[in-house]
Amino acid sequence: MSNFMKVEFAAKSENESFARTTVAAFIAQLDPTVEELTEIKTVVSEAVTNAIIHGYEENEEGTVLIECELKDQDISLTIRDFGNGIEDVDEAIQPMYTSKPELERSGMGFTIMENFMDHFEIESIPNHGTTVTLRKKFLNNQSAYN
Amino acid sequence: MALSLTYDFEQKQDVLLVRLTGELDHHEAEQLKNDWQSYLQNGMTKHVVVNLENLHFMDSSGLGVFLGRYKEVKEIGGEMVICSINYDVQRLFELSGLFKIIDAADNEAAALARLGVTL
Ligand SMILES: Nc1ncnc2c1ncn2[C@@H]1O[C@H](COP(=O)(O)OP(=O)(O)OP(=O)(O)O)[C@@H](O)[C@H]1O
Ligand SMILES: [Mg+2]
Image (cartoon, rainbow over all chains, first blue to last red; front, side, top):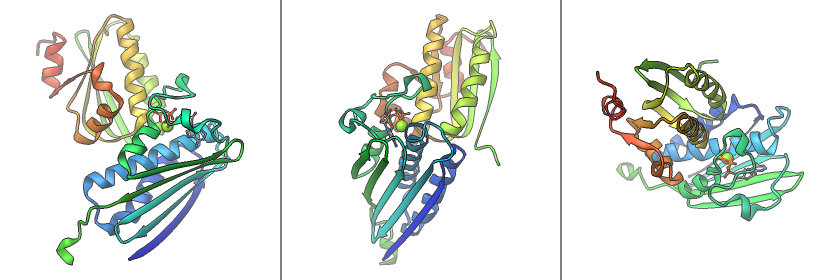
């Protein structure tokens, strides 16, 4: 089984729930457990929120692109923005590191992504944007059909 | 557009009880923060109980809101207790170390009792 989807939307905070619900609906075909579904919704929410807050600093003219690929029980997700980028990725992924404490951010987004997924990668170019790639193998929940 | 988060505030003696329903993300966090802050400044509040029984989704934005209000409650010399935390939210609390500083209770009655509210 293989499948693919791609969605692009305005960097508006209203679209955070749209983004996570859309990805959740797409991966439903893998029969995820409730826990797997929550993990995927959470990491999508984290990455999209980062694009909006940090990538575009809430300038709603930006766009966010999500691609999701399914191959058997493997899911691969990329969340991309074309905004500010990250100067120092090693620093950014430290638990509790945030560049925006005044916005009540706690610096946990990347830590959550790393924890909830099997594989996590950031590609970022200052002033060009950031791409976060996340991968996970779902447990084989479909054994009843095999 | 349908509201994905709703909440209500109830005053129980010097405890502000906050009940959250739905999904708490960055989009919802700002309004919640503003409303919550105005209740904290009503002159009657010393402590806070947050009931998360009906909070079905939360991301790091929620951690930020809770941590922010926790600091404000501490500033007025009070305590904050969070109760009825479901499994998903609990995982985020554990990851972030929030349990190390914020007190948790099994249910609303236990949380209120801990803060001296007699029902
Ligand atoms: N898409 C992005 N574009 C530019 N900078 C980013 C992006 N994503 C993350 N960052 C940078 O990496 C830091 C860490 O991100 P992370 O999501 O871990 O924490 P946060 O967003 O600051 O806080 P939280 O996620 O807990 O609300 C951010 O503070 C920001 O400086
Ligand atoms: Mg973040």
